[in-house]
Length: 382
Image (tube, rainbow, N blue to C red; front, top):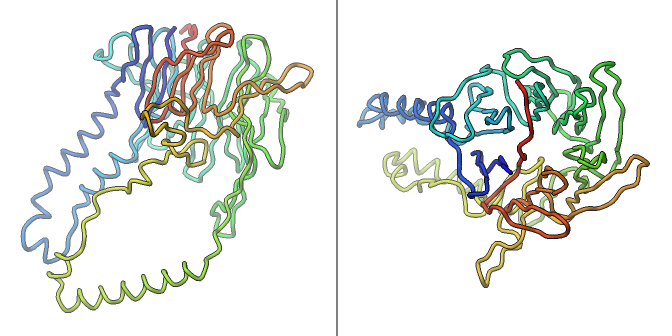
């Protein structure tokens, strides 16, 4: 068995010999170019003249943005190789690399400025993608393996994610949530996520599961023919009402800012020296990861006495469910981030661990700070 997984924007491969992280040739080249541009143009923004004019290098900002936003967004097996979707501030693409030789050259299937992959599923020679748009939407697209052309299958002011194409090559499942926008066109709310089924030959669309208080996520047909998915409570973020303490803090921050402004006017050089340098994100922010639009604490449930990571970071309200042909629902597991099947065995992530479950026995395959996605190797014919 082989398992591909994502961990903090990088991809890894688990085999019977253990887990290894795979490098992205394109990602490393992008970051290297950004750092080289910053280094090559540093002289323009150094020295007393540049400091006096308070000039800041745009190349430094580009490098910081590249390091922050470059990541592998989706992975899949295809014909024994690794197909991965890359997202950067300037472009996105699909690239293919050998699974058994990390140092071997990669090949490029597609590279576009507006291409932003979020999810991916390979079935036979069909690649089904969830693509983000500049307007904040996300839609399902289909392409044939090895080609650079893709067709968008879904439209509308929606977020369509987690596509799964059945073995018949015709039945497509995915999760879909609608948006509400204000008069300026900005997204102000996202509705609960429903499960939809699309017939790719007829175009017929059917809503399988939908509730006002529930999100249905990551649908997948199991080896038993049942539909599996993750169910969690739907929560619409609302603006926090300010307390008297919050208001007092805001007033204090305002007058503190005014004081710094007058201090800078009187002594700009001294003020610059006294301004503390931001060294990066806070410790609290570093413990948070985004998963399906929700921030989760990756330190959750960690055993402080033994420092042993024997629990996941995904809330127990995220339930892996099975829906039988007659509509009967059964809870399989709690606290699941993603899952796949290895024959009749279930392979899943609880956010920090990859676990194989068969006949009631759990085997931990790999641990990491954050594992939001995984996929078990299947046969793909090009």
